[in-house]
Amino acid sequence: MKHALLTEEETTAAMATLPGWSAEGKELVKTFRFTSYLAGIDFVSHLGHAAEVMNHHPDLLVGWRKVTMRVTTHSAGGLTELDVALAREADRLAA
Image (cartoon, rainbow, N blue to C red; front, side, top):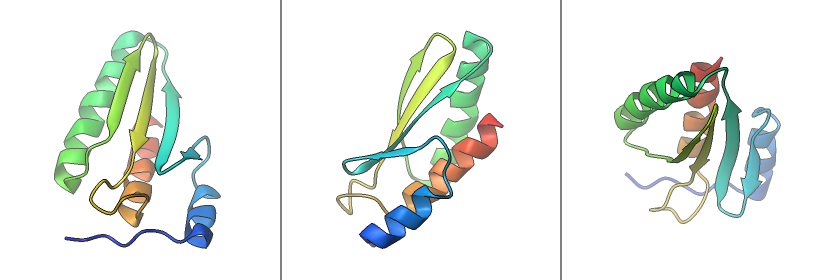
């Protein structure tokens, strides 16, 4: 299924609802912080399952007590509503 790219206005509106996220080029990016390394690993596991259900897979960098997530819709060449939905799910899982 082809997803439509977000317009600049839609991206700006979405960013206003995504605290801590930034738009870097064609990606949404956020670093999540955790109380322990294993808490970050648990987050990655839960996010991985959610991403699989959505068939939308972010790039994840796991560090000590932090996980940086980068997401874009490669097939569309930039940001789509699918990226925003996955960002919101990541926020929900990290809460």
